Image 1 (spheres, helix red, strand yellow):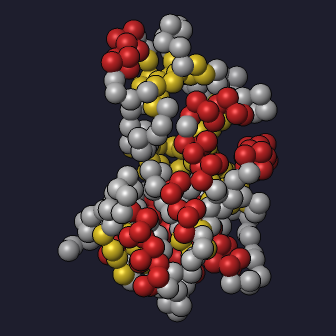
Image 2 (cartoon, rainbow, N blue to C red; image 1 turned 30 degrees about the vertical axis):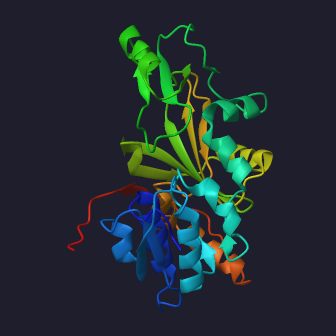
Length: 296
C-alpha cells in the first residue's frame, strides 16, 4: 500500500516498484483523500480515505489492509506518517516509530535534540532576535516549502508574528543545497538540488560525498530512525554542509535515486521477502523532470 497517492513521493515509490517488478508479481494499492490523484491511476487499485486528521482515517486504512491483504505499508505523506504505528499488528510498517516521527516533524524539538552533536545553522524561537538575513519556517511542516520565508527585510520578518502558524528562525545559509535519500542501516544517496519548485526537486544531480553520506547515516543512528528518510542540508558561507531538517519518509525526489541504480522499494521488498540484497553504487547522473498527463 502506498499512501498520499497524489504526491510526488508516492508517484516515485510506485514507479520504483514498477521498475523492478516486470512480471507484475506485486499488487499495488494506493490511497488518497481524492480520486483526482495521479498515483490512484498508476496503482492496481485505489481507495479514497478520510483526511489523516479525521478519527476514521486509521480504521479506514485498516479495513483496506485487511481487504487487500497488504503485506507492506509504504507511507509518503508527512501529515499522516505518525499515525501508522498502530497498524503493525496486521502488516509490515516499514518506517520509524511514532515518537521519533513526531520529534522530526517538530523542527524546534529536532533542533534542540541534535544541535550539540551535528552541524546545524543557529536557530531560535524568540521573535526579539535579529531578523537580518534569516530564514523563517513553520515549526511543523505544512508540506514542501509552504510557509518558508527568506527574511531579507523587517516586513517579511514581522509578517510571521501575525500568522496562525508557529514559526522558528535560523541563520540563512547561502551555499549549495542537498537532499539525501537514506535507507537507514543500508545506504545514503546524495543529490544536489539544482532546481526546485514549491519545495520539490525538478532538477537534481546525484553525487558521491563520503562526509555527507556518513553524517546522514550517523544522524539516522542517533535518532533511531528506520526505513526511508529524506534529509535536507545546505552549505554555509564557508562551504560547510549543515542539517536543515530530517523527514522520516520517502522524499519527493525518491525516483532520482532509483534512476541512479539504488531502488529503495526493491531493497525493502527483498528484505521482507528474505531475499539476497544487492545495493549498487549510485551512478553520477543529472535528472531533469517533466510533466506527464493522465486522461481520466
